[in-house]
Length: 112
Length: 110
Image (cartoon, rainbow over the protein chains, first blue to last red):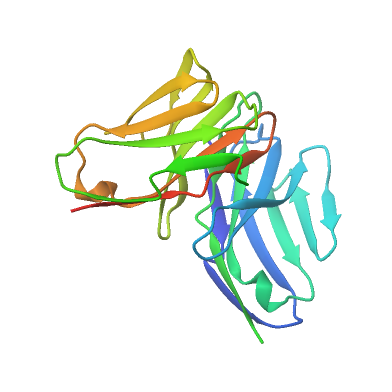
């Protein structure tokens, strides 16, 4: 089955700096890659996603890049703000499947 | 996100007890999922269902069972709870790619 590795497990940045979280996946047939944000005590919520036919997608301060050859994808947050502090999860879905395999999460702390 | 609800939100039980966690959704989605979240381990899939007659095991189904009573309802049961089932449990629903999570149930097994 699919295996998703996520790094780093914790990340601290100064407010206004950029943050990058990286994930690798094992199944070359995987075709959908969402990112979820989970604030303390809350449910995971989708913040951005990308499909295998696209190399990059942006939404305001958030972007995701996908390298299918290397089987890795990354979340980029620019101009970080304290409200960006949360745990971020990447996930991958195999072709023909509706199951998501999640990474173990990255705890992002934005220091004011 | 009141479209996906879970009951109870918190539960403390004892080893050996049977417990049921319930999930309801008003999104009209066919697909429903149960996940378990443990610190440092991310979200792991327990069971999933694509319709009332379709139930599938996930990555960590041992010790759990599910029931899809209707399109909108999906229940998770622990037949005989054990302490290592202490975790945060999330229900999720989806129609195509995106999955929407419920608020979670924090379960403690003493």
